[in-house]
Length: 79
Image (cartoon, rainbow, N blue to C red; front, top):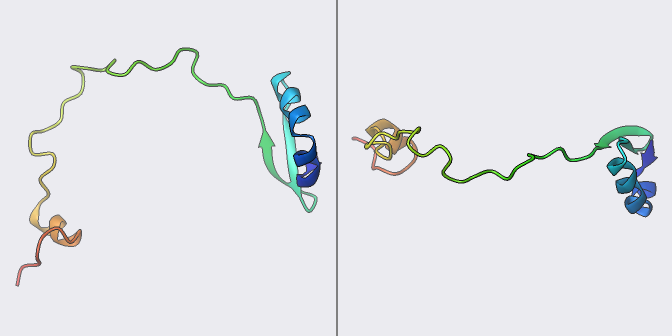
């Protein structure tokens, strides 16, 4: 466990430790507040449009009912 000032001073070494499979706990006033772990992102980048044809949006999707439009200030309240 490292305190915040130690972590600032040793950031490069801590990142290297994380890349080697270790987890690093960072503490403030002796109490753990954060855990530094390796990022496990997607193996392949996402492909935009990969769900084309699988998602449908109703033609009236952007039309709010009157009461909702009033609540959001998009329409004058009824008298």
